[in-house]
Image: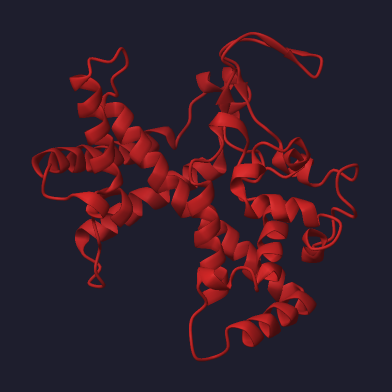
Length: 289
């Protein structure tokens, strides 16, 4: 909320906070449940008892974004430099496009959708991943003890871990990468749309068709991974050492074809825009926890 809108909710659990938390929760509940019509469009013709509730909650989300957009336009010039939030930057880019008379100018809807994507993408992914990490470490005392001992040795009890420790805590990085491979936060990825007619794997794909990438199948493929059903972070320090080195240098990760068997953040120009921030957030959360 702070990065997107310069909004900080305090500890008093205000009515605005409770309302915001509620519509975010309901939206994610509906997204997590999925819809048969995502895969078989004919099901969109059948009654959906939860559809009206979902539309009502989405309206509350749009009302929030509309209010923030109006407020940000009134506050143009009040924030500058590093104090600019994400919506400030989007409005600034839109204004510059208009001034340059560009062919494409972002609409207000573009700004709202992008801000919502940034907000939504940062909530459920890290929260779900942390829950899986807790469960996996509870069930694997060996990895838990090894990671705990490393943190005691490198960081100790008198300070918090920082990104300056990342080179000495590569086992932690390996644990997180194995987490992303073993229990992906979005095993079917997010829906994409074919930009043109093409043939893929012997199947004809028409322009406009909805496409899902099966991350789970890719990350559990025994032709690509040694004993893929085993949760073993050491693989990223042993047989997949080069892959870990590639991941740590993100500018290489998206250009080396051999890295494409591990795509927790997607690939290509439509990959997760929060790739860099997401890894940092997860690493710090896990290290602090």
